[in-house]
Image 1 (cartoon, rainbow, N blue to C red):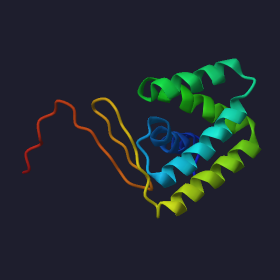
Image 2: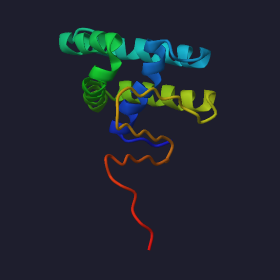
Image 3: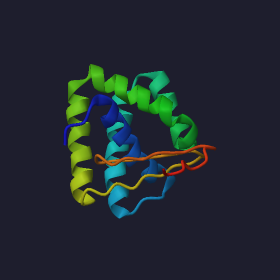
Image 4: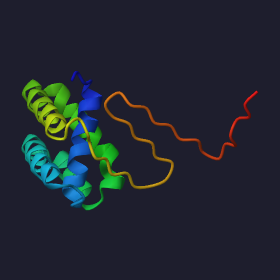
Length: 130
């Protein structure tokens, strides 16, 4: 699985959210804990990143974007972090048989993974077929 840095950062949040919100199964707990510990260790000493992780733990829906951006920035500057996270995401993919649980909170949300597609039509009437 070859992911861009942005997709890798997003995948980390897909794994973290069920773990932190206690919505995951046992496999999500194990993988989530590993990803959380890795992210936490890489954020150690960076007050802004540590604060963002704490805020995300309290309210994932509000702070997901900020945390994704911080993870992405750390991935770009730390090849070891990128390699470790890639390995964990690949393991999560293998452990779940390619199935990833996603938790979405809010309205007008579309999520897709593993080459899937998702779309949202907001206040648009269906198109008439001709």
